[in-house]
Length: 112
Length: 171
Image 1 (cartoon, chains in turn brown, red):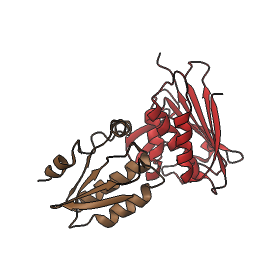
Image 2 (tube, helix red, strand yellow):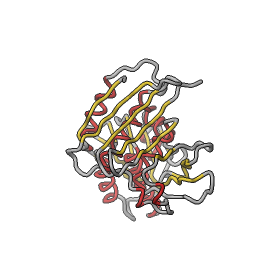
Image 3 (cartoon, helix red, strand yellow):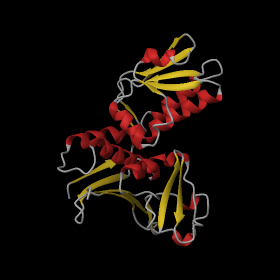
Image 4 (cartoon, one colour):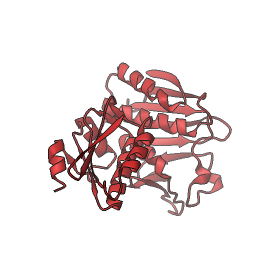
C-alpha cells in the first residue's frame, strides 16, 4: 500500500508491505497519486525503498505522477531505487526521464 | 522443452507466475533473470488484457532454440488478441492474420521503431506507408522489444493468438 507524508512543501510517498509495482497494483497507485497531486501538492518524492521490481504498468503510473506534478508547476523525483529497478528503468529507456537520488533527505532538499 | 506452465488469465496470477520464474533454473540463460522476469510479466499481462474472461488459460512455454542455442518463449491465449483493426494509421485488412515482427531491425519487412514511452510505430521498409500507433497501454510491448532479440505477435482470428519472444545467445 502507498503512504504519504509532508516535509515542508514536498510530499513524500512510499510503499509498505509491497515489493512489486506491477500491473496488479499500478492502477490503484495511479488513482491514489492522482488524488494526491494538486496545485498545492505538486512537489513529490517517490521513495522506492523496498520495491525490487517495476513493470511497464508500474512505470506508466510513475510517468503519470510526473506529468501531473509538471502540470501543476511542480516536480516528481525518485529516491532509493534498487539496482534492479535502475536496470529496469534503463531497459524501458527511462533513464533520462526521472531525477533519481540515493537518499530521501537529499531528494527533498533538491527541491529547495 | 525447458519449462511450460498454464495460468488462469487473471492479473492476480502474476504472483504465481513470478514465483514460478524465481524457482526454475535454466543453464546458460542468454539474459539476466530480471530481464526474463520482465519479459514474462509483460507477455502475461498482455495476454490477460486480450482474453475475453479470466477463466481462460494462458500457457507459457520456454524452449531452447536449436540454431543459436538461445531461448524461445511462447505465450498463448484464447482471446481475440491484439486489436489490429483498432490501430490508428491504416493497417490494411490483408495484413490481418499474418505475423508481425516487432523488432527494431531494419532488414525485416515490418519493424517497430520505439519513438517514446507511449508509442511504437510499425513501418514497412518497402513503402513506408503502413504506420500505426499503439495505445498507451502497449508500453509493455516496447519493454519486450527492448529486452528481447525478436518479438512476434501471431494473430489468428480462427485460432489461438500467440506471442513469441526470441532471445539469442551472443555470437
